[in-house]
Length: 295
Image (tube, rainbow, N blue to C red; front, top):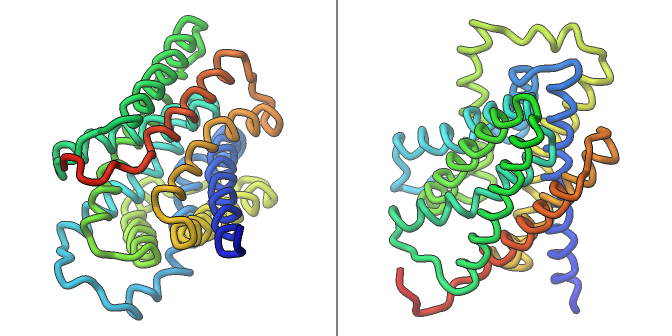
């Protein structure tokens, strides 16, 4: 096993840890001293400052239209982030991993089918079925247990996943590279934040304890906003897109276990089993398509 491959494996694992950590940090932030708007400011403004210069230093695809730019920002930027952060107020962190990360392959398959005419094949059917079973089981269990308001968060997570699926396909067709995409989405989102900030503001940034704000600056702005992109890009470069995408399968169980250890959230057998089931489903759903299959 060469160093290039080992670096790719490490980067893929790091990307999964960052994804799970962001979900846990977001849940902690919106249930303690900060709100969705405050976290959104940190999530998009800081990466915009760090990555914004890329917008002016790299050539852009000739076929990239303003309509495509708006779609990328709307589906991969601020609306997506606000949905996740708002949902985290209602549902446990483990639900983010299942209902958002888990349903992304489902929505992506639907978008690819109707937009790109790509059909689900082979083990991908099994993966999507396992994801659907896991999502339904956790949702039904939460409703039976009467978890207050959890269904609101679960619904917001799934809407966010649908937006991300649209973003995924739009990004594939945009011709942008990973850094350009991140710079565009974060900078565009930061600009769009001006309107809600003018209306509602982000007052909790000035009243929350400094250590809480600094923790979210680190997680939202630096780790998730920048390092997450870098590690996943390295994984794609070293392993290929198909293998790198398998790292997403680690996120649901990592989030569930991490939230139980760090936030004291309950990790019952239903949450544990559905997180594992969804993880297996994501792995199968991310399987490479057979060559020569229908498109």
